[in-house]
Image (tube, helix red, strand yellow):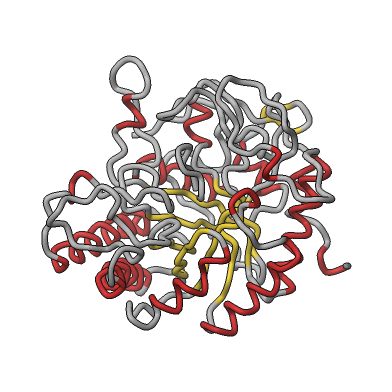
Length: 396
């Protein structure tokens, strides 16, 4: 997720970010994954804490990782960029930390596991956002001209990243190879001689499949020496694109060694009604014999705003029967969860439910363009929208 232009889809934490053992001490083991997982993408949390944001439960400042764990989150999801120097240079002064780099993600994973959550690590294979509107080549790889060399680079980077995390006792329970890779990876600004990976522009399924297989093999190789049985997710934006993509990638692309079909479901950008999600999930399970999860979703609790950063979700995000209220958000997410469960799916992850307004900056603004989709109010208090996570689904 995230493109304001085409929305389809060393770190220090100065806030109250304590919880469990500090420093590099031992991390308690995460409990065995439940049958259906509730996830939350918390990629911005460290940056928000560093830049004036605070999270509260009933008015009291609290560790946000603990809040999510307490309210039913089983999995914390984090994006990883290759070398995101821009996340430091958007701030004035020198010696600013980068965010969504390996250092930042390592500390976020540590906090998540201290608070009892499993982890999804989302490799973007880019220095910035990768989504259906852009899949930019990492600057360090732009001189690559052969597919073999690119496969080696992807394998080595993926393996070294996971070996680092495994050595820290932080091996992710889930790994995504790419983010919303509808048209492939590393193609939108690729040099002329860079290997062709755009599956929407030419017959490049085989090339893209080799790169994906290289990343997956690195996951399998590290996991074989880990105590964590890591599952691999492949992630497509919007359910209407899933069948086409996996039909081609599992045949022409020869990509089969994954565990989970993941997709984004955002109401402004999908033509699939809420009450048809279960049918799609069931179809994907039956067609490919894989687990199915929604790995990105969100819904607004208000149409108001509290900063000058324009919100991405407006009236076009609303579904009949689900007003932009805290109760409407909760009810939408409860019924979305039921749809996934009824289709035999195994999880739902909310995208950036903690992206509250603060002095945090990105390329487009200061604050949050997602503040009306969070599970926190404008004062940073967790609100009733989060109740869908620990709702008693078995009693319905």
